[in-house]
Image (tube, rainbow over all chains, first blue to last red; front, side, top):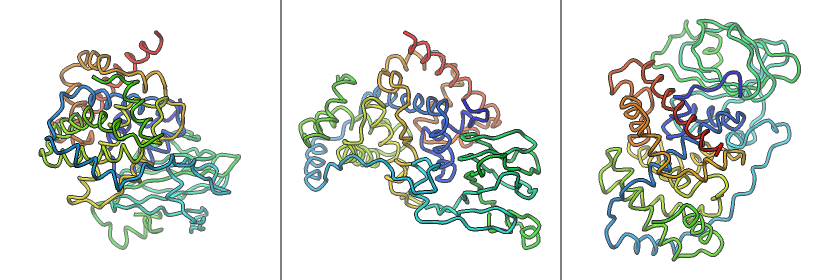
Length: 216
Length: 186
């Protein structure tokens, strides 16, 4: 059990499939790395299955089955998907992240860290992977919107505690924080930030480092 | 009625030999249930029917990915129907996302999920569990599963503070864990 699990209500939203893509990706990584979260989600999904099984059923009409069977003539039963291939250097990435990585490479960001921006289908959240060398920190920043962080390699420490692989942080926590990467392997984390509804203006963007780096 | 083992056998028959008779049996059992489940969320009969049919076609396509040691047929079909519903909602006003993308994000691949719970879960056990929840907890859980709502939306609609809804969810999940852990020890 991780020391910083995702809250139950977020796991419920994940299990019922209502989370937007960015937060869903963050929770999927936490679930892949945390057996307790995986157990909770698998129980919640089983609950959904049991609720489905318990339905009395609504009539589809006589023609429905014949219609679907006719359509199956053009639909192949797909072979079992092969296990996801890990890219060299990206062995730490759980399989749900792999399709988002493509051939993207780490890019140095102003501020002493590296990042990979992750593209989403929707437009409600910004997602990126951050890599911090041991002992390095992100500049002090303010949280201006909902933010989710999942640690994928190494760990970091801020004034709220120490976060290791699989740990899940929900922001905004304190008004400001300054995460520092732990000794050992570089810290890699996925960060999902809700796009603020209100634009902060040119000065606001300049004053907030994460905004300035095109984060929000 | 269809037992969990029979339903799993049918999906495996589709996977191994494209068994149309097995599909037909599965369709007769699950398509009406999916339609009824989706209609509880407020969908009209026509949309619910479309989701049920599309979900069953997905069951055919993805049959080889079904693993009875990880989930019961009902649970697996629930996840497919849930994703199809999301897909349909996105088509009406939200950006389109291919259901396959959602299957990846929403289906952790590790085989370590409790086999006893996922595969052996029966409707009766969960029904008993649901009866043990308070009316307040039950309302929140039903809205989450049947009405396709986030906990934030549930709080808004019930005009409750977010913290109240969170604590009801946590209490209900606590009951669920307790009941299922008892079950696993048997």
